[in-house]
Length: 320
Figure 1 (cartoon, rainbow, N blue to C red):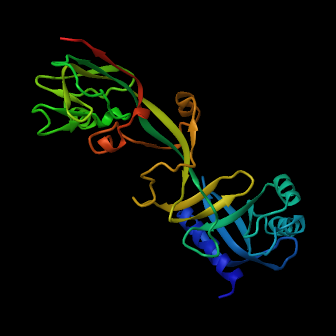
Figure 2: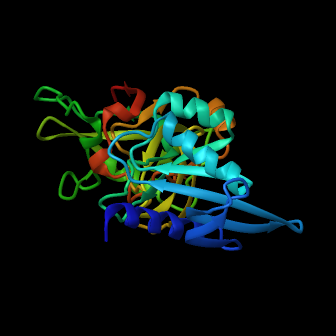
Figure 3: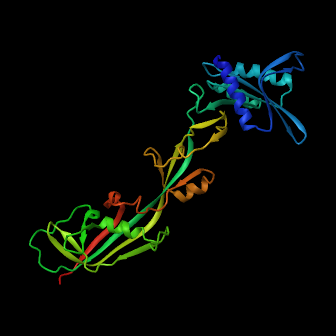
């Protein structure tokens, strides 16, 4: 099948998809009232609106270069001859600026066809979305009571998520990050956004390791945190989507089959962060929104616990 015919049939199929109550005919023939001759119409669309018959004619052109004002002018003559209610000119290569201006004056829609599954007719269409992730500002409060004078330098890892805790002098150990993640996932742990929360960890018998052998008892251990939200403006594509894109307005009318594989599950590093999330949400209420839940033990793990997640930390030392 030649490409031009394939393009016409695609356009007809798309209009059947997006206009199920209309009669869509490929390669129609309509009598011109002025020319008194049959005019070949690539695609005709007939519909009834409030008892009034509407005729929309579509010309689908597969060209190697943008359609110019002459192409639009020729199509306008056909629209007037068959007394169509509306004309839609579709071109695979787009349109020149003069063609767009002329078509706008004549109320002709200039469009392109998109089929995501086609090698020839797939456009680079990306759907905007709002991606939201929880952000956590927290600090760790530690109070220690040394039980003896140290005999070695009191050294700890620069990443205090890796600091080791033990109740049995080091026979079994947990990192501070592991303790936090276990406590975070308990049912009574508050996750309300916008509020300041404090988690007290019972410290009976818990000691913190300094250097290689010095275990120092903990008097208190607390996590103080606030859950907020951060946003990014991103895009994604549909694997199964075909429709008509209005070049002048940027509006896509399409039939889309959305699967779980189409929805992003991770944030793309190229997406731009949003400075004022509340204002952006208010101005883009209709934007597709994907919001990640507050971190749990599955996505807030010891592996991603790091000083970069903290706003402040300190230790208070007291000598017994």
